[in-house]
Image 1 (cartoon, rainbow, N blue to C red):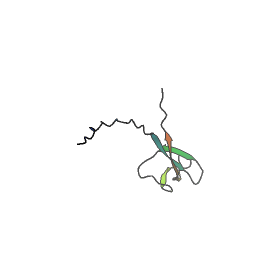
Image 2 (image 1 turned 180 degrees about the vertical axis):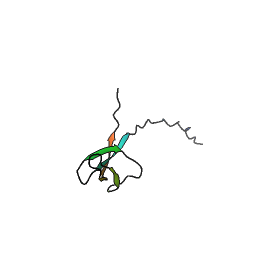
Image 3 (image 1 turned 135 degrees about the horizontal axis):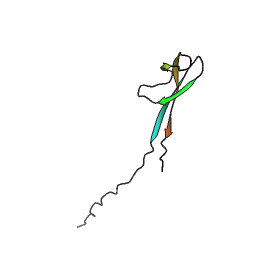
Image 4 (image 1 turned 90 degrees about the vertical axis):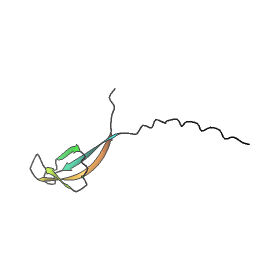
Length: 73
């Protein structure tokens, strides 16, 4: 009669997931001013953005990107 060893409790592996801040860049097609803001769920490239703070024209979303969160010590 063979006995199977008792199951060992699984060691919890601490997985550290990298955290990111996601940003949206809006660019004015008239004057070229770029504005960086926090990403919003409905953002996509070429979507109309807010009015330009410099000339008042409607901006377009031209870039969405993420930056790693820097932990301060």
